[in-house]
Image (cartoon, rainbow, N blue to C red; front, side, top):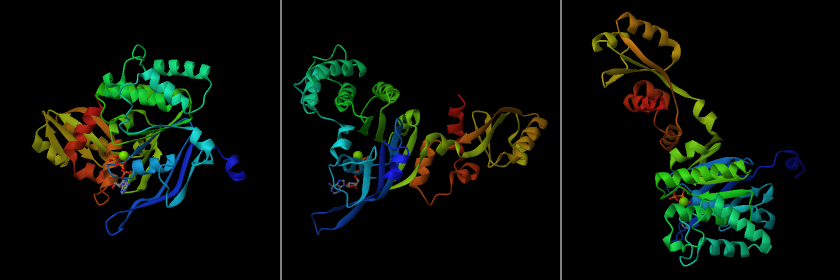
Length: 337
Ligand SMILES: Nc1ncnc2c1ncn2[C@@H]1O[C@H](COP(=O)(O)OP(=O)(O)OP(=O)(O)O)[C@@H](O)[C@H]1O
Ligand SMILES: [Mg+2]
């Protein structure tokens, strides 16, 4: 404990979390969480990523005390997650929140606040501030049955914030939202980080994650397969280099470098390392060709995710050099626009 108080306290720490479910039929055991290990720094946005059935919601239920783990430890701000102090620090938005249709946004927030025994003056101010913050001003007295999915999601966030928690846990907050709803929610989550909140959210929508997270943990089949700062996970690996060129005969190019594909009158050459770039570029120019671009192609979060899902596939560097060249080139093309 002494040692822990000397370290920077993590907003959330999960150590060796295990959970087994038993089927009703034959009481067969299913190991769903197999030793989850992760930590979330204070003030960061943490993306908890994994495909359907990986164990994201089960982990979240264990954090919230809705499920009892078989083994492991969960700490919120250094306190056991089941303690009253820890519980008060958490705000939670479930996947597909459902609220009583005949309430208005304002009524729902007042009701949620009443569960926390807050003084009336604080509740009044906070409800007004939250309605404004989540962009529902003007709709506070509309019955929820008239709300769109995006509005419900924003209201759900306001409801999760009513007791001013430090740590927000959001289960698949982007699911079912249209692009505008997703953008609004992203902006809102980013503004919460500005206010000093820590946000832990699960998702399998990689674009949304990539645009806003500080760190990610990738969960597959009940275990964390990778965890780290997004910038490190992505930029650690330049996958391969791509040279885009034109105005050269295919036959001539094949003599210089056989690994290329042709698309829209351009050739996309893939090099596994930067060692040969100069030589290849000079040879192309020498043969009358034109260099359109030289791109270091970095791993995207999507690459990492799919690599981890297919452990027996060769690493993407090899895929870049001699495998999925066309798709890599497409990805690189987008990067450069
Ligand atoms: N109460 C339960 N009893 C038995 N099995 C369960 C129970 N809850 C979840 N599971 C199983 O545990 C596995 C993980 O489920 P979980 O809901 O945690 O996945 P998830 O990562 O949240 O997936 P999704 O992206 O679909 O929400 C699934 O195979 C699911 O069927
Ligand atoms: Mg889930």
